[in-house]
Image (tube, rainbow, N blue to C red; front, side, top):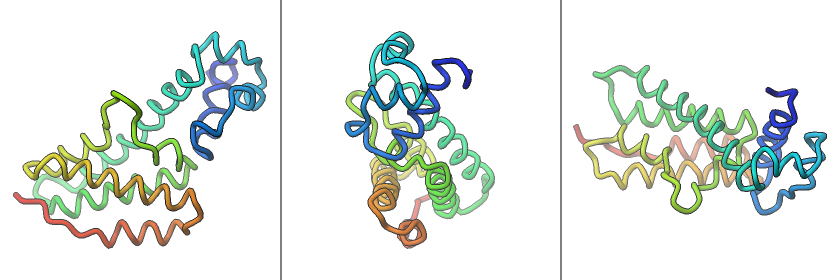
Length: 168
């Protein structure tokens, strides 16, 4: 798919939306980066928002797969606080390495479910579900800090410094 116009648009969008906020990326620059016309973007995705939603879904799924894997790798008898902390760091390292700072650093828009908060809430149950939302917000703040110039090691250290206790 990556050599088709739709695939090239998706690849260009992942890069552009990873580097800069949604509002700063234009339809023209997305089309130019993909080597297609703006009409191709509208044909395949209906709008810039449609393209964004398509690539965010893909990138977010890859993130969640890694974080779920990190949590599962800790095993059932493991300290859940440590497992969740590891998942946060695995996800952070992935997002920074792949350049997904803005696309994953932004919370979902509108009525979209926050699947990261959902994953973290499930991993921290029976703690109140709001813990997942708080952890997701802290994780996104670390990505936003890197996007605005903080060294990744400093933002990662801030995540490490988070200390929480998940009740059994």
